[in-house]
Image (cartoon, rainbow, N blue to C red; front, side, top):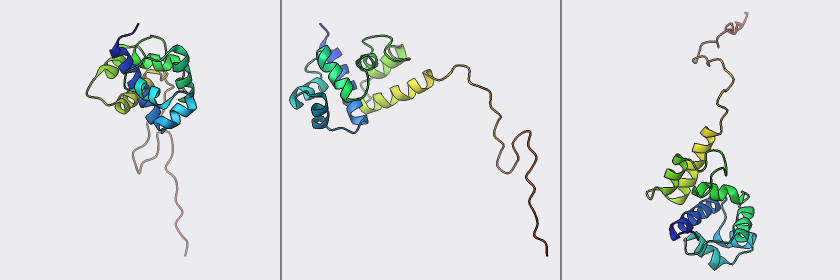
Length: 144
């Protein structure tokens, strides 16, 4: 059985996902077909949902149950970058609110999930100068 701390972290993740989806507690409870009081207790870490309930909540939030668990650091391999020391540190930092944790995890994942070998690109030209390899654009002067 998981500890109360685990339930609290999972509740924080669910709340952050709900807030990012702009859903009220009542809306999510209706979508997930879970009672409003029970969902509130899950978010506050008072109850740990069963696998069936967790999947229902995840489906209503349009994420996978594995991704929710991955964001808590409970399982590795949820989404790339989840379960890492960085993701765990973000989730464990008491100074961050649940929406801040979710936002930081999103930014972190966006960097981790990037292609490690991006295609080379030309440096953009400074304002007023042509891009490398291009001739300056000729402007016509009005004739009189």
